[in-house]
Length: 198
Image (cartoon, rainbow, N blue to C red; front, side, top):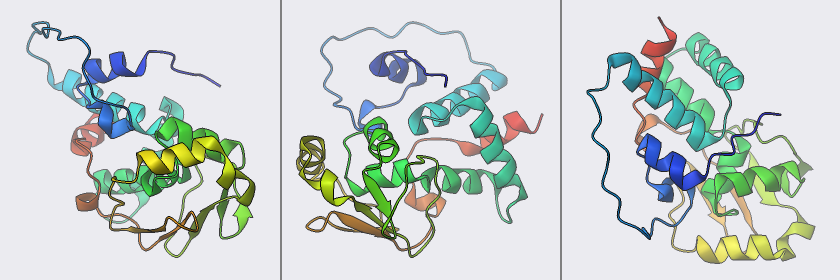
């Protein structure tokens, strides 16, 4: 499997993303002057938005294009559908519920079988949750230091309105699929739609 090994903070700087969005600290150790850039072309802006979405959700090109094609076939606005598909991935839901500090950590927890969906072990990070699903940390994983650290670190993080969490039982339920208004990411999905529609 292809892995992007670019340092996270460097990639955040390149794409203009606040590291907090990914669950990383935003403390700046050095103040750097931004380089002067030439005026970005329309294609450049569209490509940047696509790269930003792929980087935030940890999705590679082939899978991202497949999500776009699926969003296109769904009724409604393609851009909103695409964001809904990305947001309803199991690794993202685990991150949103506060069971992991970052999406990468959430992805690893799912891959290692530490997450249950409706009482059954699911080890596929791209698994899509549906309204009514119950997402819980597996009993053995509840005592793991990584899980405990994530719960402490995310104590002040607000869970989105489309999810409900019971932090004592380390489980959460999916109340509904998110609307675009409930996704707090600075992504202009319309530019992605325009890029793929060429």
